[in-house]
Length: 146
Image (tube, rainbow, N blue to C red; front, side):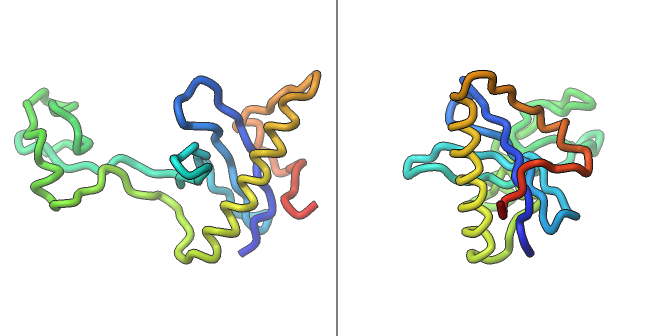
C-alpha cells in the first residue's frame, strides 16, 4: 500500500503535540487525526485512537475508563475499574494502524519528512496554513512522491 499524500497542520503551544496530519493511501483511502508527537527520543506518530469504555452498573451507559461519574445517571464509578478489567489496561485503542513494522517505518519516515518540509515552509513570508478540513476535496496538492 503506497502513501500518496500527506497533509500537515502544525500545532503551537500544545505541549509535546507538534502537528495533526491526514494521510492518503493510493489516492483512495484517507486516515485522519494522526498526531506527530515530540517524544524523549525524537518525533513519532500516534495513530487515531478512541478512549476505551465500560458500562455503568446502574444505567448501563458507556463511560470512559477514567471517568469518576457516569455521564448519563451521575453514579460515582469505581476509579480502579481499569486495573480490575486487566492488570495492564490500556485507556485508548488505535482506530487505524499499520500491522507490520516495515509499513509503520515507511509511513513514519514520509510523514516526518513532510512535517519538516511544512515547518520550513511555515518560516517563509506569506505562509498560510491550510486547515485539515480543507483536504476534503479530491484535488490534493502535495503528493509524497514528488
